[in-house]
Length: 269
Image: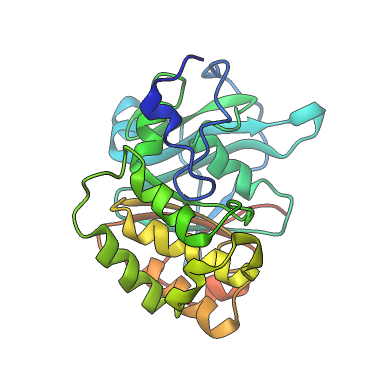
């Protein structure tokens, strides 16, 4: 797929999304699918039955929609007939053990992974080579892959701010400083090499960037796996209570279950 210069500039490992991995083909929307394992949508302790086939109105009303999505790389079933609707401003946690496809769901929304069948929608538009770049511009994505960059942390931050998608945003520096303070990160870490930062420092740096970019949709992939229990709960509570933001988080950590304020989708056995 041919990419425009501004599309190339979206490659900010882990926070915006790397443009080096692009969709090379479109996924066909399937009208039929095998009956299979469905996620149990939980609100508190109340299980909700999966909905019927997705209509046009439902796609338009959802901010994020996975419609009967299956993923079977090499014949291995990871996801089958998965369906999830996330409304604007909703906070959703996909909870399950490692290896059940939680991270794959986020990568599908960003166009890094194609479903074997089914469709993924963002604001009513199917994710395909023509729509994926707009979705990426709207989303702040923090990956569990902490190998963000080489060089100094401060240079990495400056590079993210210099991207065309971020230029001219008011108060970005101030918001980043406030997020750093809230995440208890000393400004001195910006003079350190990225490889010299601890896992927890790199996770919090990525979160500080995500919080300062002015996005209203957050995809969070195991973003508290390397921080201490107190900070873990602090971060989970913040995203669960963010006004107007749409949050889709994935985790196997029970802390995210305990904070409340998020609709929980259990994935896996």
